[in-house]
Length: 318
Image (cartoon, rainbow, N blue to C red):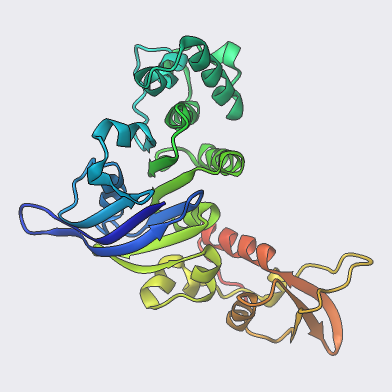
């Protein structure tokens, strides 16, 4: 779908923003770019729709170099959501949503129906919100409109540059949930920039961690938690903060439910880091204490607990 081949960006002062990037984003994938400030993640994002021109290498979309696309054709097929919501203040919500569909010559009835459909998708009643101005909406509601405006002309690709970082924690979590639901329904190819590892773990199918313009690791959230490639990744993910009791990962065995045939069995004294390694290969683990099964560890439950641990700062439990 989107392929970077030996891509570098060097600015006139000689500084490299990114160096020799090689990776591919699959069709329908939620791909997260993350890293510290200056890592090159936003530059990488902006090269996809040519807001920043690359210095060397090639970016391909659907097997065609982006330099071979008409610039308008390229950008009309790529939705873009910024941290700064950038709704036009003098236009109604429906008019803001209609901008790109009008540019690609959709008829008025189709545009109106699309605006109402998208407003409903993010829980905003069209009758109540379509004719409002952006100033009449909360920050979270404005950002919802920013997201659906990027979807208005049904583009294949959505680029999102730290879209939720300016919001309060409640609005941010709600919008993350909305975005996951939208992605479940529409299966767009989403490239999402964030500096928040918790957000990356929650949203991403795969995560690309960058440092100093280079890729350090690309993998699933599970791979980042269970198989970090070096100390930088461990520290960025926050794995060193995990000093929890194994009991925090254990769920009771539901009445009448057995274990899968390939279930791993461990003892209650097994170190948590060893449990994480087992979860790379097993969906569930049976936990025994003195020869008696006391519960199970489920991969998805363990990921949720550890993500919550990151959110709370990784407090140590004795």
